[in-house]
Length: 311
Image 1: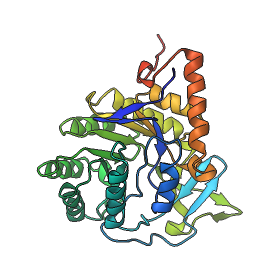
Image 2 (image 1 turned 30 degrees about the vertical axis):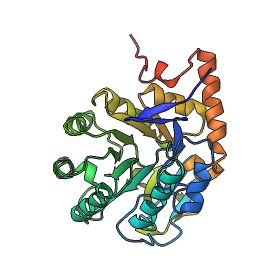
Image 3 (image 1 turned 90 degrees about the horizontal axis):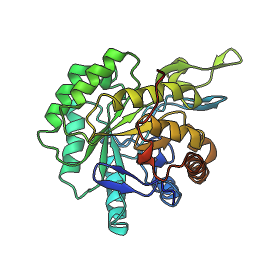
């Protein structure tokens, strides 16, 4: 019997494949489609304290090898997603969902997390450290001092299961430095990677999205090698009780297999889900099971993190 069941922290999921934040998660209607698909669970759109319209359109474009976007965090606000999650919690007491959050300032981050702490929400929280925050400053996760300060402050009051959404890192020293910080705190998971920032796509001598003069996050096939590298680099460096969610470049079951081989416990699909819709979960799950069958694996734990190196 081949199973794609997995665990994140103390929570079990029937399938290791789910949506990535930003895709099929803006409102209840989209989330219901993921809920009723083969996906193991869903993550909400990254919520800010208040409703946000996001950047001017066009702000997303499918490309031959993936996508480019500069969405600007459009979302329906913290309360919308929390209310819906609490509804689902009552309706599906045996299922666990992921609530993605970002504060537009350090103070707002604490406001959001304190609201979750004081609520009845029992699922996983994902704090998005891969959004630009302060003008002139890098993404929070690229500023190691700020990252450590925020986590130190958060864990003074927050004791629910918390994970971090991370941008891609590109230097081995940065993996060392980031892992050293994460290992100090009771983090349940890290999610590698958000899109590769500030790419540029051109068609007919013109940029393809409007915000930031066409600069946007790159996703899809382009980013898989970077995503796998981040998953594996952190798998080798973080505590074994911190799970990894692998995100980036998943088009087939083979891509999911490789994310797990690099150390991921769960795998998220973004661009491909946007292009194909929630039916994609069934196709990719079946492809993953076929690969497992060929290789004689009955569960993902039998090959998770077992990437082979050359002698």
